[in-house]
Image (tube, rainbow, N blue to C red; front, side, top):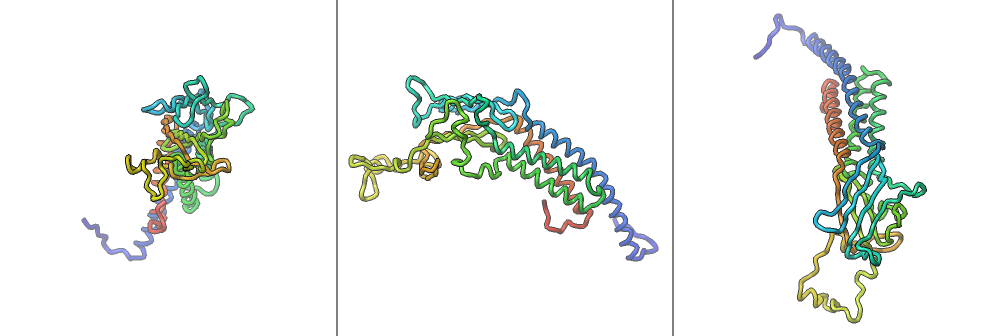
Length: 312
């Protein structure tokens, strides 16, 4: 259905009226975004509260599902593990004489090093930065300056998105070499065995524990005069009879530097435990990211920037 104006209005007047209407819509949107910023601040404060150190903390089970390899728990308070008791039964890590398993206890000594989860520290800092951005958008600058508010919302989206990716396990902390980010042996009492790597990270809001027993690379394939798998042709007697060996884990053939020494991973065990508090943080960050994106898209349209580089 077409709408006609009679007598026809000059094109210049039509454009002027359209610009006036657009300016009024933009002003209305900027006013309404102040309410949106208040709502975003409330959501970010809820995330900050979930990441804050509050007793008694979250006690999480860290146990292997179909074996007795790993049985135990850890307690997280804020960004730190304050307690932990894990029993290990690994074929490549024999227990002390007379003991059925190796016991790992997080040290309770006040002089000992703290077990800090670096990913959570980064996420907490990003949430705090997001709150600062909201405060600057609300109390600093001109709230009716479309360019200023657009820039602040764009920055807020990037910061919240980075926090969400970090919690999902896509940040720099999880991409690094596990040799550099494994827990210090002195965090435990008694200290960890020198050939055991205890690596704890966060993926999809869950704590992921990966235990690796290590051996010097020189010992991994050290043939002797009586070895049954020596072959000058490249095919061992064992392989001809039983077929080639299937690697026991995905790092079996890789070489790593551990405390200045070349090592291989002899045995690898992975255990995960969902953290309800972190799952709540993930849900809130995802909702906040979508809300900021909606505000940015609406503002971009009224500013006439829908064809710019775009999509946040």
